[in-house]
Amino acid sequence: MAESKVGGRAVYQPGASSIEGLPTSLQMFHTHPPVMAMPHWHAQVEVNYIIRGSVHYRMNDHEIRLNAGDMCLFWGGQPHQMDESSDDSLYAGAHLPLVYFFRLRLPVNISSRLMQGETLVTSATDAADTENFARWFRYARSGDPTMSDHAVDELLLRLERIVFEPYAMLPEQGKGETVEQLHPQSSRSVARMCDFIAANFLQEIDSEHIARAADLHPKYAMNLFKKCTGMTLAKYVNLLRLSHAQAMLMREGANVLQVAMDSGFGSISAFNKSFRHIAGMSPSDFRRDMRVVNTLSGIQR
Image (cartoon, rainbow, N blue to C red; front, side):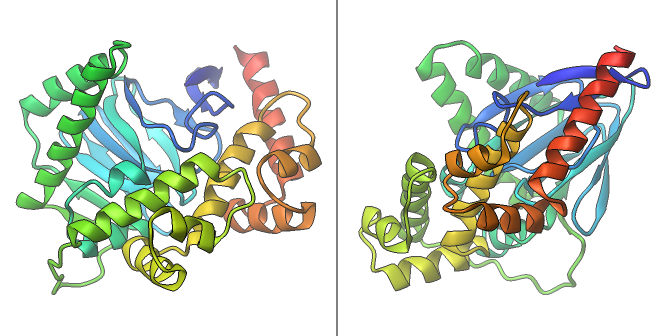
């Protein structure tokens, strides 16, 4: 995570080596959260645990304020922006690619609602969470694969425990939630599809390739993925490509056509349409705005 100074405050600056540029990577963090100059998106479920201070997020269709002791999960595929972060704030958490997210034994209604843009928020945390997130971060950064795997396993178990305590889904959609569980085999199938997509999203792949990798019929694979994620297979592949392209556009001298080709899009028109749909602006305008932010950062640094 790169930082610059704008108006005397740390500002998050995504880059090709950050979470946007590595959409299939599980990354943990434990740091002061800098505000964001612009909304961004990434193809992972984000976990935030506020250790100290407070932060404020603007999501697609709602806002949330998190204070010390709060934990939240949200789908990073929706544009989101942390626009407030108190001077004393400290948070920890992780970015979970879907292949990890679908290892979680969560009720279907929770995973589906997260994928459709809602945010899960809970205040049912304690001092053990502060210690555990710090340890998981150390393990993940240790360079020891066994310790890193242990941190991931413990984190996933902790996230499953969220449903045993009070939590809220925002924005509220009313009462009467179901508690349907994903069949273990369904979760494994979705994880296998995500695994294949993660390894091949920059190549020319379609639903038949993805289904074959999970030993499923293409129609069943598409229906299962949509049921579990709220997204089509094509939309998820597109999101990974857009996340990768977003990071490439932030590089100095980025060429929009080259970025489109290197991100797996077959044409510049398809790239422009997909990028505009998620960002609300063209790739060229996004690149221009990022240059303005970087220029202002350099002036005020």
